[in-house]
Length: 67
Image (tube, rainbow, N blue to C red; front, top):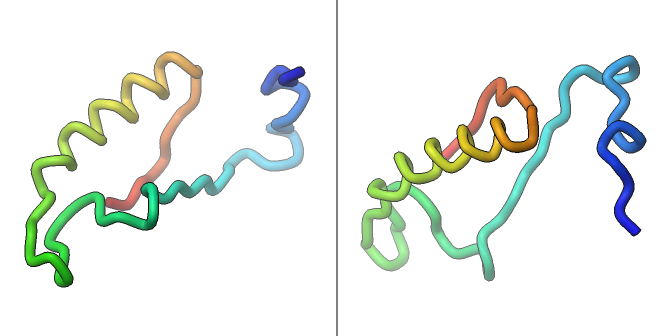
């Protein structure tokens, strides 16, 4: 059974958490892909909007992100 975030995350111990995520099979997500010579810059704005939406839903602050 899942635990509430309040039981997992301790803001007293650590105020910031570094979270990472990868694409399926490490597929390229944003910018120019040197192997396929395709450009995926069009995805960046969608990712920013999605992070804002999820941050509001889960009541978290995003301090920085890389894309």
